[in-house]
Length: 414
Image (cartoon, rainbow, N blue to C red; front, top):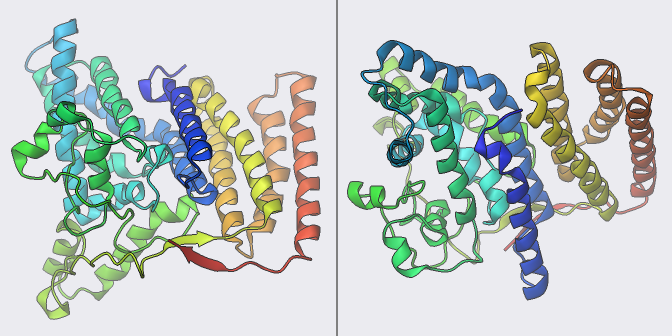
């Protein structure tokens, strides 16, 4: 079982999302959109399940540095753990800041900023590749002498703290905001207004931003998202989009030096002959509209039901991942990513979405019943196969009924 505090906090995350949905129902103003929220959670699922492989880069690398270069051995006393928590947040600030200031690193972090809504589900929207560009920022802690288990625990708590600051339902918090990061401070960080771009990088303690010149208080209500709209509900594509665009940009750059600058300079950098640094566009509330795809009620209901099943399966896998061998883990992760991708492309109404979902619905119960849990017994095997049959029948019904409904179109909403 994984004792990572991030994994253990999953039930709390969804309880808070439930509370926010209740607030939405009571106050009758829109906090969530189904398509956006599902994509946010899908990105979190993708990041968590692929993270079991990327631990080699983070935990194993940290352990190697600790074993070979630690100057001291710091005992995990309560006061040393508090110190480690503060230092982990300090290095998080720099890892986070550089994820905004280096184009290559931004590709791993941009996923977190793509949502044009701002609610608790956005906290779960994380890039699968971000860890590749940030794990080494914490090596000084290993060199100082903080052991790996203590580091994983304290850095995990730094991450857990940041969940509650992703909301518009909590206003400013007075004196608390002088030291700690809050929803108000972090709303600024997610704003794409020019004055808010690349501000408030703190995890827990906002004092880092105040010390290093990146603090901005919340003034007008932020407009959320990134300067170039993502326009997709596909969690795989939103993780790859920036790197695909970088590949095109590198091809356009003349000279190795310019290509290198394009990779390691801030996002939007271009050589002078191509126009120089791209300006940050102003926000125009009258013209700027959120990306939205209106999907039929039948499809939305199907996606929601399937998604609840996927969430349950993902939770079971994450809590028991160490019980599977590497190939079973790869297979399970592939099925989970296939599931969340299927949900995304159905919500986008891609031409291939129905075929992909039929393939997934038929494949998933077979793999689960006969490969991942071959010794689970006839009851679980039968239930898993029944899931496939019911899901497939639902798909056929939806496909037939949907053919009589006018095809909805993409539109933007305010």
